Image (cartoon, rainbow, N blue to C red; front, top):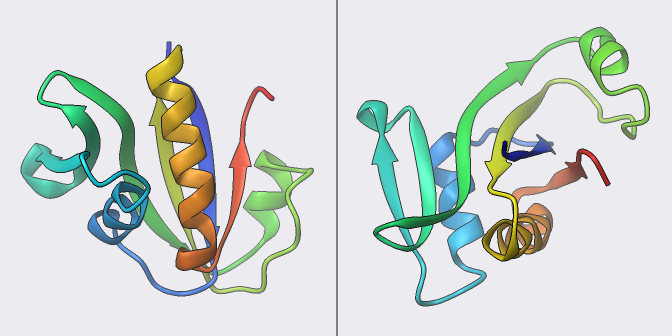
Length: 115
């Protein structure tokens, strides 16, 4: 089962921009598209994804965020909600570190679930 990470981005982003910001963490990693580009994976190599960006959605009201993520910091609307997952284990931990490192470049708050 993967670990979930949420990015609440203050400016407009799409799945490719999120993946490209994450891949900057490690020069040897690459990005590949899945499902005609609606999902992006950051991979250590062809068989080892470290982060999967599942989607990005524009949020106009903070009501749903307060319901789903009651401990999340307040982010002024509109903002862009990015759903990210990482595998369990060392690859996933590196993926979380990379996602957290990418958050400032994305103007985002990074929430790692299950910590």
